[in-house]
Length: 231
Image (tube, rainbow, N blue to C red; front, side):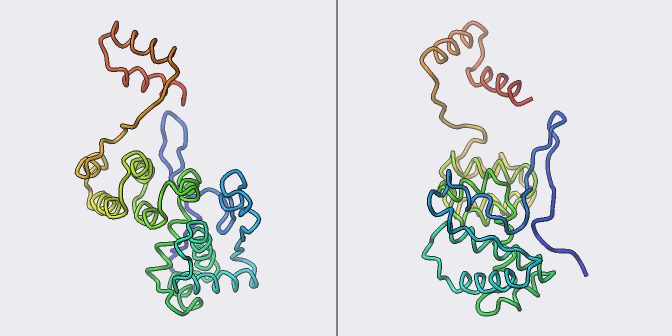
């Protein structure tokens, strides 16, 4: 049987010898973000972990997926993350998307479970923005369709470019049709890597002074400094 279970991948990009994760690294079903009080406040106490290796927990996951597919979320982004976790755990426990859909029943189709399991498979930095409300869960579904570094670039461009869900879907489809992520974003009026940055007055003064003396754009100095910082 082909292994099509989410959550056990380790796709990443190598950058100057460093690994930049583009998929989830924590265990499937673990409420890493949902259980973080600094992100979800008191609702962290409501976080549910779904263990794909525990029959009782798997039954809870199936029920959660069934309710989730029926639309009983009221557009609650944290509940949607719980539903995504349940989808991922159910697929892992049952061994395939088809078996997971059969176990959940109701309106839970293979397509529905696959889309939301991929959301749970997004890296922590992206899922945190979903929990905070910066990225809509429905936009996250389309971000999750994109692989590799383009996945992260689309996530941050969604925030900085204030992309709508429809625009995110269009970019994701274009990238999957081999359009470079920069071009796909440009087609939606977003310049990759451009966002507003607030500096202290002293830093702003020094940056502008140095850029003028060196005859370069301030962004070039900021970019070079940050590249050294992240090395």
